[in-house]
Image (cartoon, rainbow over all chains, first blue to last red; front, top):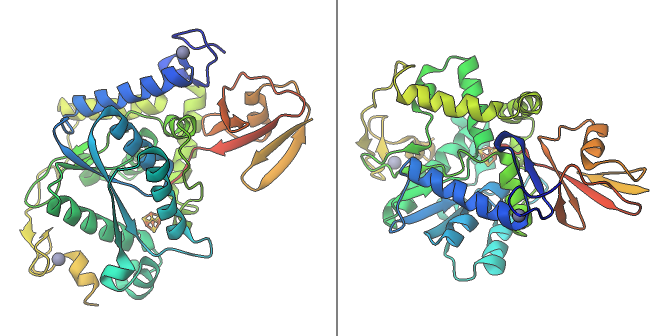
Length: 306
Length: 63
Ligand code: SF4
Ligand SMILES: [Zn+2]
Ligand SMILES: [Zn+2]
């Protein structure tokens, strides 16, 4: 199989783009695709400082790598969640982030916040003891990550928080939300969430990148990442939908991309509309001053009350 | 023979088939899998050769 651009040996076949590329043309194509996405959705500009949420997984490390190689001022942000579950998940994932810096971008800044050290409790403990966490650590975990990420972004003067969500992540969420007709979520799912009332801007530069391509990029760039998933993600419905969508993609190349991008287009043009599009009012939390919809204390601060 | 590794499983197959065939034979979806030989990414049309060690990597992760 030959590279569509140079005739050299192709390492990947991307049927939805009708492209087969060699290592160097693939990395070049990948960076261009990400750059175009950043521009198309006006995520941030070359003068901006960006905070990349890194987990030690392929997507976030690939994102950090491509942003740095493109010349962006991108700093990494890792949150130590204290998840061990017998496989040392959190320790391993932090080690991967540090190794990435040492091997690929010495000099890159990695911010590390350890939940246990800074707040006294880790995710497994919180999930076990709090009402919100009962049987679903991801709810507590998501809340904690959003809060800390926003704090670091605000304090550090970052223009945006960039996450490694890829097209497969987005399309899996879209499918779940569609199957349940979650109008509120469908109204808000977007490549960019603009900053407002103390909430930092959030962007997803990989929304047009298939998960397969993000993994391929990490592999050809020699980025070591954590293959193990968070133990709490096992058997998650997201993975179930991803596999289902890949069945569809196998029969009909480009199906995932069409489903997601045409949804965004139709909504932007006003062809489809959802109730709940109006933004809810935000007020600063009495304790931490971060924005909240919930009266006095934000959900994060309430977590430490109970 | 060709050695195939996927997660914590290892098995052997005859040389000479394509990587895509190897993936399908393992009941996996080529959209969800990438293949490595000697740590290098290889395309799905690559023919396996005697003595190859092929590592299959799932690209699907959640969370
Ligand atoms: S899978 Fe759940 S618990 Fe694990 S890191 Fe993701 S949100 Fe947190
Ligand atoms: Zn080429
Ligand atoms: Zn608060």
